[in-house]
Image (cartoon, rainbow, N blue to C red; front, side, top):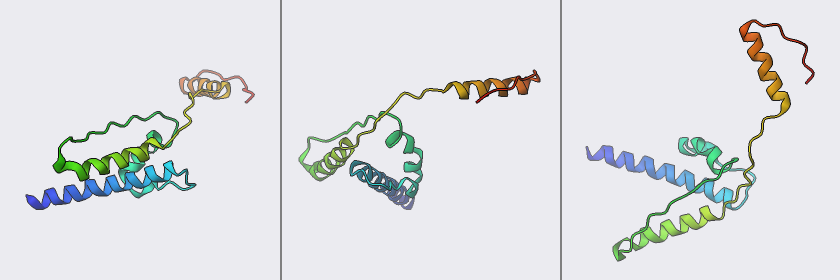
Length: 117
């Protein structure tokens, strides 16, 4: 049973390391962001570097015995804080709306007029 927990901890650490790499790349505004290095970062791609606002909570301990972990968490959070996205509202163009209407009509078997797009 202990082997399972070690494997799980290693998997979590790999995911967090990959997330840290992505956060560093975004914070430094690098041209390449390594989203594909891990499933976690692939799933979070739209939330981290896309057109979204992301909120991160940090949990730290006031205990002296957790000082190293607290410092690591604070450094991690400072890197996250350096990321700036320029989120914009997603708007649907008139053309897309017209084409969706054409698709609906075709699926329902209704005649479709010629559409200028």
